[in-house]
Image (cartoon, rainbow, N blue to C red):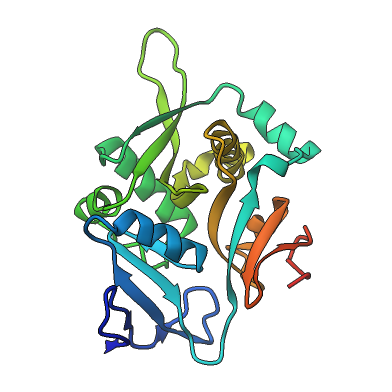
Length: 251
């Protein structure tokens, strides 16, 4: 690691490693710790500057000769539902989302393992154990919660957990840190459903944005993000509205 500065907060630079989105390239990240009384305001400021949170670390890509990772956010109050989005909401009208404390459960972890095995078997999180999951969920110095999405069961049985989203509360919006769902229910489009639900939760809180993290042009893992509009991207000229196209051609 290379230390970039000596003033608080201190930023560090990771060594190069294989990029998870563009395998032919190497990635580096600049990061700092989120701790103490200033953690919340620092996380807000860094999120606005394109950083993401992982546990008590805020990080941002700092790759040599590459700027493919683009931070994007949905302007919640200006969203006009499209027919395909209305269909998703109708399909999942039986699901109930409940906001709970950021406390990891065995049930959540079992669903995560199922999700990773099908959707990201070769990814960096594939080897995550339950202790890792507890750290991902509970190690946070900023306001954080989980939204559990459940389908009711018959005859008094407990409802079934089918999806979950770890969400940070920012001064101007909600940041979707990580979400996962039952891959056997692909017909429900649960990933998109959770984003639509977070848009409504953002409006209810009278906040402005749903932060989706990074979009990478050419990465099939990230293509779904450009299906939502209005969508803003962080550029060298600040946050700008981009055209809603399947592959983000506006950028």
